[in-house]
Length: 376
Ligand SMILES: *Cc1c(COP(=O)(O)O)cnc(C)c1O
Image (tube, rainbow, N blue to C red; front, side, top):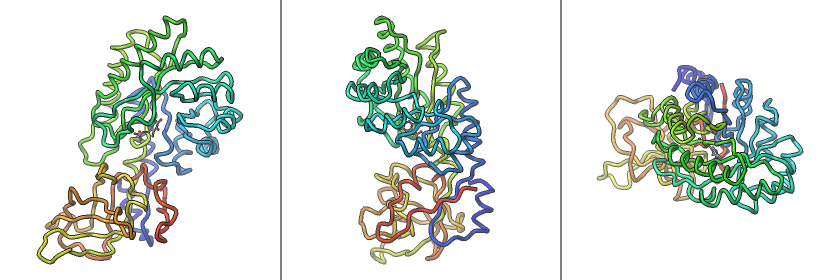
């Protein structure tokens, strides 16, 4: 947690849970990515946190934006990004939304099948497209499954179809899984991309772009490798597989851009035990899975939890949210150690919550308001 956030929380004891985002930390993360991969353009995956202040700050630094919908494209434009700095990176788009994006000047689209290529060719004639290939997500805390991407074997067909329909077959994209702890995880996909480049060259189509996706971690446990280590590993992979003809590259950090910039303030509503003989306490907070902490699903993301009583003797706690849905338990399989002196009414802080929280909050399940966001 930065001193700015600590100071802000001290002087602003807001009612109810809130997320405080330190814009300076976001800027530092952007600059760290720029240093780690100086030859890659940065497209912020804005779904991670689309707060207008964040988008404007990144736009001012020169960032591009990876958008998943027309609304996100509108927000990126409003923040000051020009259409050439926007990628419509969702492989699942309505044809009329593609047409709207095209009308707004967006010229770069993701595809992963023939059917989507046909939509783009009709609604955005002449646009650049990149084909997303499947990645297994091994090594990631929040893998992205088989929902997006085609097999590397099928990609040339998809791109060739795009070329035949008058689109620019630009290249390949992939996503190695979010919160990817393995700095080498990009290597296999970069090798796969270079093989597709060769296949396409044999067919007379020259690809130019490799979109390396996101996956760069936020700091939760503290042992996550820094951006510079990912950059080094990726640059070595590109040299290994593309030699002295490196492609144009893009990265799309979401979590790694904003995760570390957010601290979520919550209040202890109840502390109880299921039976007095048990050691484990149940700690119920005023925020849970439906208030923005959806990534605690399967306890995949374990945020550091801080209390003003840290340093005192601690014991195991199940941590749960306030709603009347029994799925609203954050951590039970692996209990958290929280101070034994913790009391009802205490404030707890969840660190590393700048990504995938405010927009995951439900509109008002059980009457609990959506997570408030304060950008400082
Ligand atoms: C969500 C997403 C990202 C961001 O992933 P992180 O793991 O948060 O960095 C990047 N690219 C695409 C296409 C995405 O859908």
